[in-house]
Length: 285
Image (cartoon, rainbow, N blue to C red; front, top):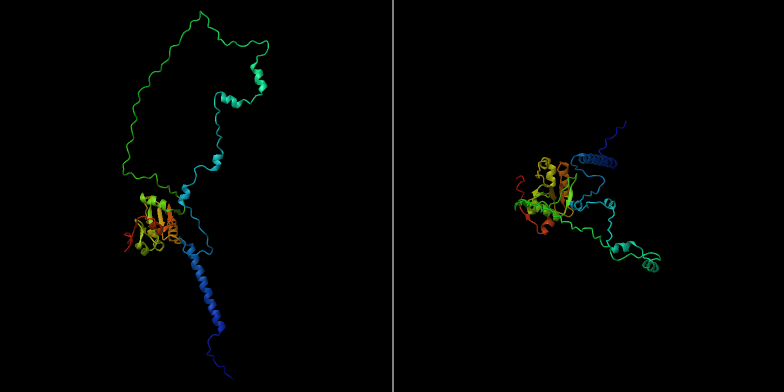
């Protein structure tokens, strides 16, 4: 009886290929599940399967909206111009007459008396009396109105500040609007870049809060207090999306009046606006 010999050969090429494909399928499944969990989290941290372009409205476009709509303007009553008084108005209303009718009107008809041009004298026994002029009593003297007290020289000028609507998402703003808010200290400015970029140069007075730190420390985002002022976020401008991503994190945390300055630090610095260098004094050591 022949005893079968044991084969010391390893798995064949087909078995190795099937094993590699099994590992690949398991890896893809785990990646899909992890990404789905990230998309379901708040804020979302996964990658959407289909990209959707987000359109963010600007604050300046909201300020330029007209007060009256064209439909309301069309319902107004038409304005009429009164005709001038005197012979000119009569001439405007009377159609031009034929020359022959003018000549017939100037010649009186036969058998009719022409009116006398001399007015009749009043009868002699009638006494002509001249009424006495009626004089109105002089108006009573009115005391001068008291002048309102002058505003203090240090009062803040709020008339030039834009009205920030309380919308559910972030809004964009331009550099001119940011400078108005900056000069009046009417906004909390946040640098969304990392700490090294903030140290190399940032908008003077801005605090540093990178997008990654906001994701890692959600309690820090909740503790942000602007004192009733709007939040203004910026990053490096151009294609930088850190400020917009951080704005969405703030909105998800319940913050309102969140603005994004897309020009970023390069545009602010190039325009000669105030900048500063060094680490954030409020950052953790």
